[in-house]
Image (cartoon, rainbow, N blue to C red; front, side):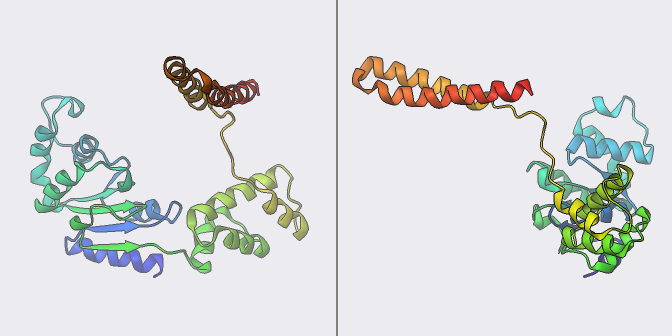
Length: 259
């Protein structure tokens, strides 16, 4: 199903006051879909935060700052407005189980919940679950119009490497623009273009913190050695083996930290 068709389907369900869950992998365009809809966009699926955002967006009057109010007090203030409200909640897969209770109350009080998640969660709350598939070439090209990329070969490579997922396509388009500005890509040179995209590698943190790893081995050796001292003095070799891995991890950790 095309993204335009999905949007139209969701809008029809909103008019009928039906809640929908959008499910798709990271980079599938869930957030983009939510932001195309009219409603209160919620970035973090936290109970107090959701109610705070409703108060702020509807300019509801409170005696004290909403952040100092309890969840029941906030809900009492928001409740009268829920029957005309559409709440767009992102990253529902990161939400805790208690959130389901308050979302259920909101739906019963007339709110429409449009959720986005990397996996199916709280399915009993929603009228329908829509699974996002990869986008067509035409959809990807239309989405990349803002980057003003005119070279057909570049667009073909971006679509091919993105596998039709909009998040990856946008990332590749940004990398292409960076490559042009740094003169890593020569204009009208297909070999230069292909080489640049082939050499693109995922980024990793500059430093890798191995502290928990080597600490685990050191503590493990200490506990094992203590046991050997008490019960079996002829099995020190096993303790030394554990310690060796611990000290090796410590050396790697120190080397990485110096970089």
